[in-house]
View 1 (cartoon, one colour):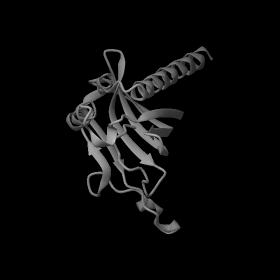
View 2: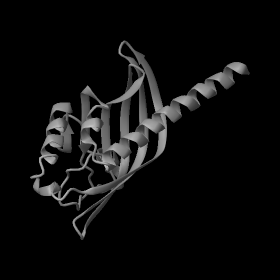
View 3: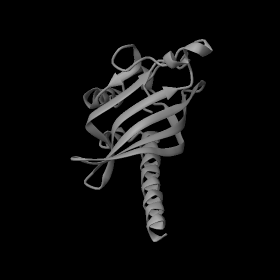
View 4: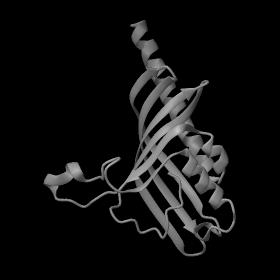
Amino acid sequence: MADIAEAELRNLLLHRSVEAFLFDEADLLDRRRYKEWLDLLTDDIRYWMPLRRNLRHDQMQNEFTREGHDMAWFDEGKPLLAKRVQQIQTGIHWAEEPKSRSSHLVTNVRIVGQTATEAGTEVDVQSKFVLHRSRNDVETDTIMGQRNDRLRSIDGQWRISRREVRIDQATLLAKNLTLFF
């Protein structure tokens, strides 16, 4: 019985640690602390968002474009993410001047896998998000969806080594895609 209680406590602490990390990450993005956000990413990160298609009920296995085979909204590594941050911070980026205001809401956090590797512990995490952006006086966007993340423990700190963003919309109505999810 004590072993079960200890395992439940470890799982609870792991879940809380992951959840706190994701909440802190959202706060960094909302406060436009992009360089600190980049520090949360591993050097080998894969950050991608497949396209979603409207299909008949019997074709739902093809609802999202395939990684490495089809088009995506974005498919980036850390160097390109760093370039995007650098561009936004120049003050002359047409889509981010004036800068957007955002609210990232992260919920339904679930740990769906855990692996011990040579590099450390990795956990696979699913979460739901709502991202609201406002810019200027009349531009607003609300994007919702699911994130599939792989977090890696490095020196006792979580880092994102993979993020797949699956938005609910098949047609993105936002004027640009300068946001980070």
